[in-house]
Length: 82
Figure (cartoon, helix red, strand yellow):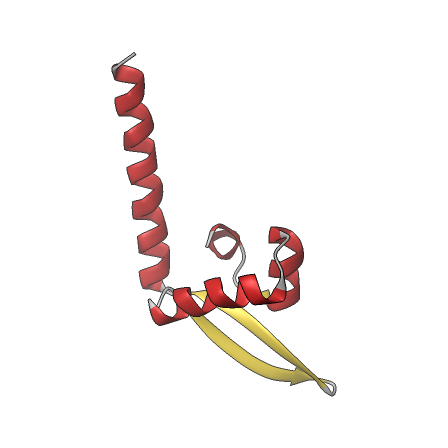
């Protein structure tokens, strides 16, 4: 999701290279995010090759921001307890 927060669209191979994941591992993560409606999948042909791109949905962007807020609060709480 962090990649999709800064890029409008990202293709499968770019995600795979950026995240250094196998095809199967990335596909399972993307499937889970799609089922949660956090991303949208677009499939098209570029020349004769299929290309799959991914876009974050509004719900996905909000969920990611909420996740970051929760992490930030956890860090702040931990610092206060030191």
